[in-house]
Image (cartoon, rainbow, N blue to C red; front, side):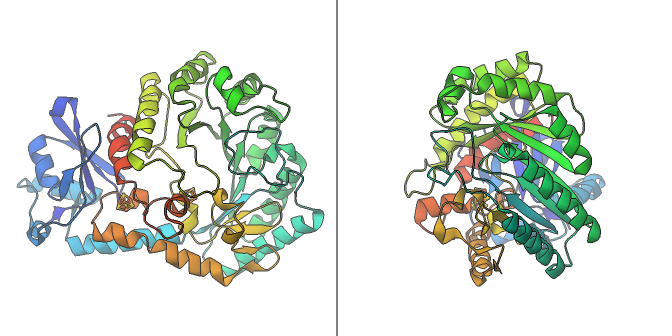
Length: 450
Ligand code: SF4
Ligand code: SF4
């Protein structure tokens, strides 16, 4: 007799006439009548947000593992295929273990490449403040980085592809080096029969259609540009080193590349108290510029550079995100299913390295200025500390499993950088349950178009 999945979220729709059941482990969804929802949500407890969601969190009596969720066998097959019903609770735990194993051991070598520290901007909140802006890969370091990548490929026959994330500093201050990395990785990936995907994270000042057209056939899949508000707000937060405005040049560049097909274009907004009231104004400008259907909006909390005790609580983060999300939804922009920082979290994934301008290796871009976060270098490879750190941070999900948290497949145990900021320990407790309770009842029905 099938039982309900403990990864079902129940989201009331249309004045509670219907319920959206969303399964976080399978990413599947179905709309049902409220009485059927009760049987599909036997583990569910009410969330703490301003819009209702029911989800598993905390212990439950053992008999719910045996509960038959519905008396209409005709639809069991569909619900079983969707993972909203499962054969047994134990079988579902094995599925979760396999899911986590895949999540922690991706078959893509993911490289976030900060080959230059240079940047034209002087953003007040930059998590890289204080770096040497002149640092960049020398020809020898360029070659050393390629050798490191090839070594990783040879040591990991399970790899199926390479992802090159162009990062900085500002990657487009040195287009020649970016293109050299792309060209060399194209050769390397073809030699080893691997796919090559490229993404670009840029401040947008040097974006140009010719660049996109050159990189598209080589594997460019995504471009991400930051705008923090309308000109008045953005230019205060993201001026040049000479305190010159940047908003209009970036917007113009965005428009010039937005009609080129074949890649995703995201406008990311660093969200905090300084710009939360101006998100609607920025979005109106983007609509007016004809960009509503060409871009997706990436809302992310502004994270501080390494410093203890500077983070907001998760509920406040969730409320701010929800308010901004409402503005995005009101105007019909695309936005991710799970709003916020990196999903998945690079920190906990093998085959995943941030390479900085000095050739040091890190697990997460936000740790790049913390000497204690160095896990190796392209010259020596990953040190033993890398594997030890990976094993230690993955243990954060022990709490999630003990709490039988329905958010585990999408949350992964919480951001490890935030955990370090809050507790002084990468493996520390950082549970954003209240954040998810607040934002998911908005984002899930919206992005599914329900
Ligand atoms: S630790 Fe946090 S900031 Fe770093 S990759 Fe993971 S989710 Fe992103
Ligand atoms: S860290 Fe995430 S998955 Fe773990 S209990 Fe908290 S909300 Fe759930």
